[in-house]
Length: 550
Image 1 (cartoon, helix red, strand yellow):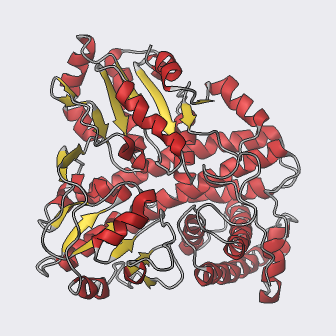
Image 2 (cartoon, rainbow, N blue to C red; image 1 turned 90 degrees about the vertical axis):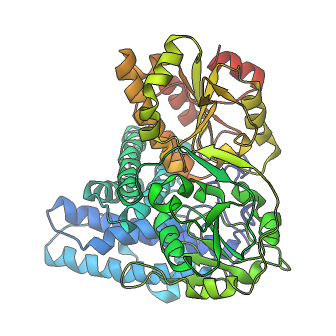
């Protein structure tokens, strides 16, 4: 019997300084948390050995990198609640680790004397190894903080890399860095400077991972373009697809074409409407609902099946009407929900979902109207002359990047209030589900340029880095921080962490984050980030307007 105790502080809702100790706010229980700790230990072991082999010029199989990516992705907040799914990944990792150990022995590669390497992977020891206080729970809170900051960044990076790889885009240097970073954080003797350097390097490779995914998405589906998205409903039965995986979206659209079943996006899948090769499907009717945390009430009204392609699952109530019509794919999982595996051809078969949809009523309408998006870097560059002219003429005084995550805490009303309070000559640049706090406010436009420019998913925060660098070139600025751009970022989980680290790696300073500061960042580490980058938390709308807008 697993003791009903846990420790987790990786999301924004965890208690400051203590984390979740009995059950996760996300719904994760102590047993699932224990198996996730075990999985992370196995992942670190695989990473340590793969890094040592690579350093000696020994080539490791591609699936070693794929395993690291998938396993890290599965431990992201709200991604996988299924114990058996997690344990299957542990089993897979143990087999892989033994293979890599054999390779190390064959090539006479010396391995570090770490627990993650030495543990033999016996199933009888799974519980004990899962309960063992891992290397990241270092007694020194500053060392622990930097290690956690790295591993949480790696989780976000893994998510982005996974999507890119599924579309055929890979980059070995990113995998090599992930292996190296896992080895560094596993070293009980790693010092502060080494760990801080690794944190910043995680941000650098986060930029590369987001660039890789941008290349994969635009290469497959075209550059996002200005699009009006319906938020009402049609009369046909529908399938609601949530998460971030555009390849799953394409598979579903192809298989539902001509069936009389409509497809709706939810949450972070909203930006699928912006891509030419996806929006061409006439039965992609619109976006249903809002950010992830409202799904319990909104899914009840959708009536049809729901597909989760990635994280942002909220465990349903036991008597929820939709509990029997939810499907998962990729790194996600939930007890009792059917998991759709990827076929040998790299695609998924959604026939069971489609058959179920045909037996369901059409969605209940919860909203009417349209929202506008599609302002990734290519679309912004197409409007560059107009935007630059507006800036030079004084019509646009400032841009505020309000990317990141949404969440259910009442303190997040700050972002709605901040957006409403911004002067009429300020434009919001957004990406991620943070947009749902203000993308339906009808904030108007400036000379035809909407005051809310939505680039897309959280990974599309990359677009704002590209845009900032382009504006630096256009205006001849000496430093990216001299541009009329301020950053007010909302975070909830690991994808927002890698976005933050990516921005820091680009030298962007004076970023505000909120609604609370991360519990896994110690006071001393926060001071280092504040002293070097001006990183700070939000205060009040009035004070932050003075600081960020002037």
